[in-house]
Amino acid sequence: MALRFVHCSDIHLLDLEGVGAHRFFNKRATGAVNLALHRRKAYAGHLFDRIVENAIELKADRLVVTGDLTNLALEAEFELVRRKFGEAGLPVTVIPGNHDAYTRGAARGRRFESYLSAFMEGERQSGHDYPFVQRFGGVALIGLSTAIATLPLFATGRLGDSQLTRLDAILKELGDERVARVVLIHHPVIPGVAKARHDLLDLDAFMQVIERRGAELILHGHEHVHIEGDLPGPEGAAVVHGIAAGTALSQKPGRHGAFSLYTVAPGSIAREHYTWNGEEFVGGPETTH
Image 1: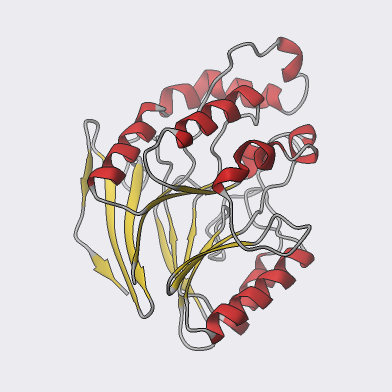
Image 2: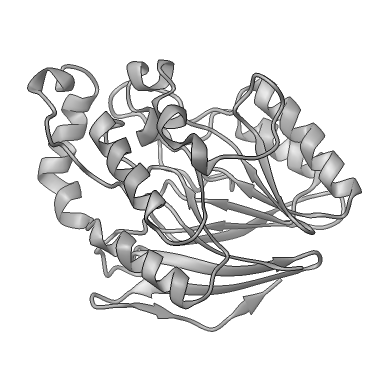
């Protein structure tokens, strides 16, 4: 049985209601400047509502969001995100991005997990949030976290040795079962794609796991640009797709607000890519792997 799902990323839903000035006496100070000068004008939260509407019209089984659901990892933002997902009208799967662990307090308090655990249900090793596995017949979504708190002007990520060890075991088990493995990660996994200070710090170790165990599809966001590539695996390449920010208003090639509709089954991956033209999301031709 195929799994039909919509993928989007970096929706950056904003809500500052009731947030006092004292909450900005940390890394959020630079984030607030970025919001004032750029982000508020470049992104529009209502585009996420349009993505949900499109997902329902396209009869998707599920919505998948690969991180950066918030801007500043504030409680008000997570409340908004949780409400939006709860009202979406279809099941939602999420993983965190760097903006969802924007400060040490947010990361240390597991704010993302405490607000959004309902959208990360699945199989996992006891005592660990990630990876989690959601199985749908012959297809599995594998959720990872690269979200770490960083210094101002840094947006790096890390999986860590422990998470990579668990991922290795999961990919082997699912591969032995001939399940189509869809890996969800926030940071790009194609070498040289990430901007300076935006990279996945243990990318080489992640690539070694994929080379040893394989995966059928890897989905990510983070760079707010359309990316296509692959990583070597033991029985063929793992397809890698990075997607631009779902709520971006940009009309620059590759940076339009976007989502993709996937139909995945063992041995088959089909994608329809949709971009925002200023009035609606318009789909391109279907591609298959």
